[in-house]
Image (tube, each protein chain N blue to C red):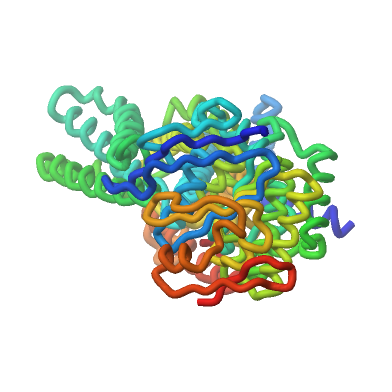
Length: 256
Length: 348
């Protein structure tokens, strides 16, 4: 197995309080990981720590056997892209410009966009089905379109690891399924490693190969959907009675 | 054709505006020189010959007074506007400009101290006013940045807050200096209101420095775009946010301090020009930086011309109003107009 990112017993604190403690995670090449957990369980902090966006107080995060903080942002950006929870939507950038920003880590300071950068951006918009929006302003788009545009930006970045923080939050069901299907394609067909935070246990169970269950800053369970999505365990973590059924694909789904 | 129009239309308008502003601000004044003569004189200066057919008093008014004054206006106008543009982008705050960040107050304080010392010690200290203003302006930025830094991280909102705090501190320092000077404080008052009237031997050098600094900033046009998405995303797109922000903050504070050290504090330019350009040209700095330079360089000399000519044209009194009054008077209604017109594309 190829370990891309390895976190060993990491602890992160904000204002003297640990929001993450003693967490060890290994992300392998080709993984599709969903991070689940109640609000405030440290999900977002975990991916921020894995990306080196927040410093760890304890433990280490290594990316390809080098501390993640040793990398220059440009260098890391060619390998890993990240979709934050709330991408800004108030700026009247054109969709095309937003996607082109994904090429930043490849462009020298005195370089203008080359043909292959334009091609990569076009390709990314194609994949995400936002090509017809290319000339529109970000401010005119719906929530689902904005998410797709920013995923297209991440695709244009041509990294092999994709981190997403609640990519489907506040989207209607067709967009939710659309985005998860897309991520599955990225993972299965294009060999990208996908790590995402979500509140949707059913989607996580259906698409992810591996699930991390977080509670109060600790990983309480880790494994395949079948192993993690268990009524008792989930009930304990979310403090509510949860029962698990099987869907027609034989995947577990939950009813609260 | 449409494509050409879209791409170069704005550039043409801005260059035209700049040229018109220069022509108007050199020919209008207490003595009005016909536009044709003005252009002839300007052209002759470029070629290096004294034109035979023009009134010699007109010639010296234009060459010795108006051209340097218009030039000073262009340089400081461009510097203040670009400073505002960059501060707003770096701090993702529409209110960030040389004033809210305390740089102007710091520079004013420096100038006030130099003026005070010139009374106290020796008059030839007067020549050091711009230098004092410049040093204090740059020093203020370090104070503001230092205050906003906690545990090695700089919070964007805290910078604005510490800018405001520092600004108050220096303002009260300046009031103290003024009260110590008593009746002789009018010099500081004049300085506080800002003026393009001064003659500055350093102007050509300052202009070169401004051009170089704006050039350096221009190289970061992509970083500035991406920083407006927020630090986290900027970083994951490969922008070294901390380093870029600190560097541009420093470069921009030099730019502001150069402007303020020659003209005193002229308000509103750093807010109005960049915001107007954003509303007209959108958020991309590749277009915003040149547009802001051109517009700032055109706007300030024009405002100054109005400040020189309007009082006598309207009331028949031979006085000048501070140029800052005019920038605010033209600026704010224009800004409101743009806001209403461009609400759909408003920023932040």
